[in-house]
Length: 69
Image 1 (tube, helix red, strand yellow):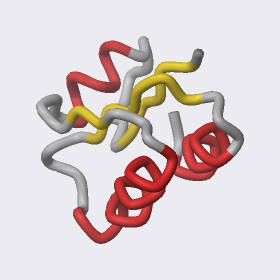
Image 2: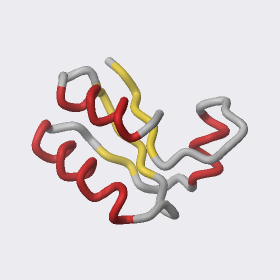
Image 3: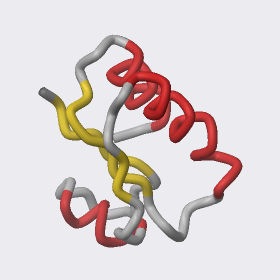
């Protein structure tokens, strides 16, 4: 979770799949989506911030979550 941690995992080849919240600020996630495309990491954009937060077992919403290899 987290933009910086996610960006690092993607650039270091540790990300198997990235989940971007469909209701998050598009400007915030645009560079992450581009990085995923450049590194061949699949992206899913069907979850809301609340759903991603629940999936990560945190009490707040999450704009991004990364499934690590």
